[in-house]
Image 1 (cartoon, one colour):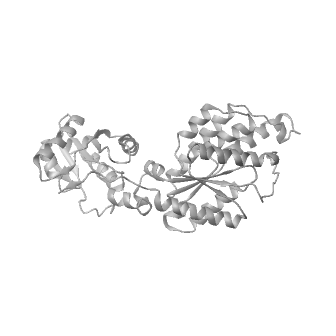
Image 2: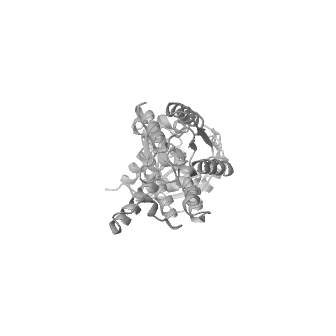
Length: 359
């Protein structure tokens, strides 16, 4: 039997973690209906809309609303409390019967709502984590993060390059290198190039009609490339949700814009938009010089490799993407790539400090 009518959970969820979800689920079990109020300050670097979306996904049976609260907290100042309450009650105007928190201020917050205060695991014994800890060390707190938050925080590394320049070999080698580190890194994921799978399907379909068909008989249309880009994005998103803090991608939707030039000529605005919808953090460009061309049945552009390397380099530069160009033998490329990824992981998560809080 539910003990309370309308319950409220309030917090910054910057970002949400297992302790927050435990609090919400506990409140949901005890209330006929529950509202979660996400309060974000303008100075914080995770958008309010993202936090609301994450909480809604993890708690589909709960009403989740958001509010911007730019008032620094001072638990000793009644006027500051009044200002916060104006924000809270504007977002949740209906009667609240119980306020669920894990904080010492829960009693005063409940009193001001005219509700009962319910403390849930104030010592953080069930899930020893906090928003402060996650912001300071996302990788160290990875096991406490839900799939949508992991997907948002995963550092996505793309290996791209002209045909037969070792992109797949390098992406797989990087994945194995990080998996061998163990711990949270053991779950490092690799996303294969969907364009190759798409090409194999095209060739197989053509051979079903013409058994002697070869790769050079396959034709592409401009409409094929948005499909490739969208599918690549979707597979990356799925992998980022249950992998480690780093994800290795064998090309990406941005690379698809150059492949469109290669096979069709010109640009496709739909592919461009698809590429811009996903955030990647580092591109590793594999050079063609010193790498033998291997015809595996789906390649025919050895003479175009210098052009493609130049186009990748030019587009990465033009669009302001962070990239490292890799040359030399595989061993040297892998070592340089590992160094670049480690530098990314050491500096990449830069959460803005929340508003100061006086207790």
